[in-house]
Image 1 (cartoon, rainbow, N blue to C red):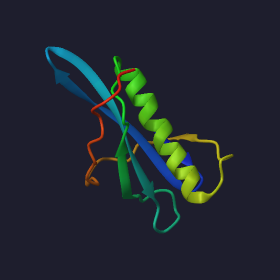
Image 2 (image 1 turned 45 degrees about the vertical axis):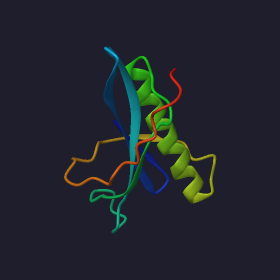
Image 3 (image 1 turned 180 degrees about the horizontal axis):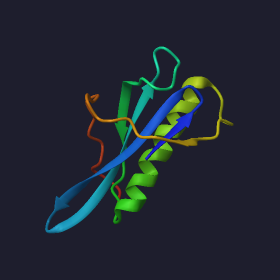
Image 4 (image 1 turned 135 degrees about the horizontal axis):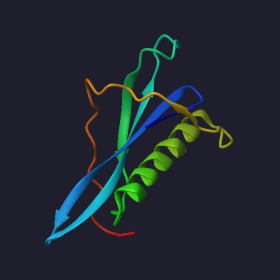
Length: 106
C-alpha cells in the first residue's frame, strides 16, 4: 500500500527475518516524489527500515509506513499532514536500505 503525504508518496513494505528457527518481520518504507508534480510519475528518493523487529507482518508493515509518513512530514515541516491512500508505485528501481533491525522486538 502507498499513501500520499503532502508532495511525497510513502510506500511501506516488510521483509521476513529468520533467526534461531523463529520468524520476525521488519517494516520498510520508500519515499517517492513526482518530479513533474503530476502525481503519475514517481522517483524514489530515499528509504528506511524500522529499528525494531515485530512478531507479526501486519505490525511491521504498519510501523514501516508510520516511520515513512513521519519522515515525509518532517521534510515538509508540517506535522499536520494527513496521509491519503494512493496506488503503489511499481518497483523498477530501489534505493538501498540501511539495515537497522537488530535490537528490540515488538
